[in-house]
Image (tube, rainbow, N blue to C red; front, side, top):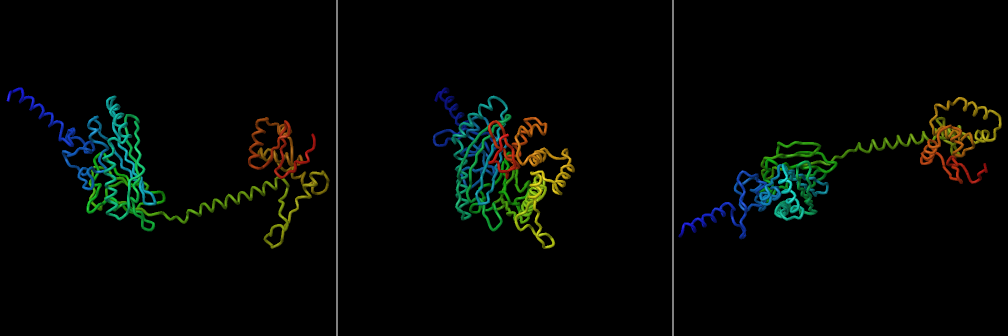
Length: 405
């Protein structure tokens, strides 16, 4: 064999060694042993086994990084990844996996754009999602609850030099319920094994309870807790049957008390407001026929009609004197703008033109217009448009017999 032929064969052998093992007739790119396990997710034979790579329930551990072979090709690997499990009271759980990538230059940003396009199209995410489906099938068999992976969504974004790939899906019947307790425990196990053997240094697992549930217990130790949300950070390993979180539904019988109290308070204020309104308008409280029982068991009836009639007709007598005394006793400066309007209406037979109110109060047209509109919306007065004028009246005034002014 000539020296040139031997050199050529040695060159081909060197290329094969660098390219890595051949799978299905296609050379698989080699991954350096120092690369994170996340970047070896799709490799056929990872150089070094990790807790995630060692999952026996699926060819690829579901929590391994998104797409190691493609990431290795573009030179990217996640710097941080959060696996968030949001439990729901019915037993389902919404998984959200956020993988963050540090983009330090134009080359990284372009590489991430290429990665994101393929990611949203599902080109290189199939293996990881398939691993989750395998895990749910085997957990379903181990627990006796029918499970499935549904409503898969993929999104990407770039913010402040960080690229993010987000995978979301619903895992049905993820947790089990017993009375007021909700358990996320047996779902992590298969037949004597666990499909989640651990977390890489850049990963964290978060389990979040549904609204109205409080934490009861979580294992293993070493987690952080905030408002019932449990968080484990890598690196760490999970033994079979050791990963769990249990919650109890909060029964708060006192919750109805504040609502009832507020309702009673509002109702009481409404009664007081109506009474004050009637007193301001009529000089007395008009009661239904038969009156209201007082403390002595007698029926007290206040007849405000005589006072109203005397005021309208201008007749003398004690009622007129009492009304005049009341008018003099009230300092108009202490009245609110709304009360001044109502007082003007009372002294003018219950209805006035808007222009007359402007003249009497010496307020601007804009102020009077806004004030009357607010009182109309509140039901304190009625505004009726007649030609170019607004007629202002109390809600119960009869304006069908309008006098021509």
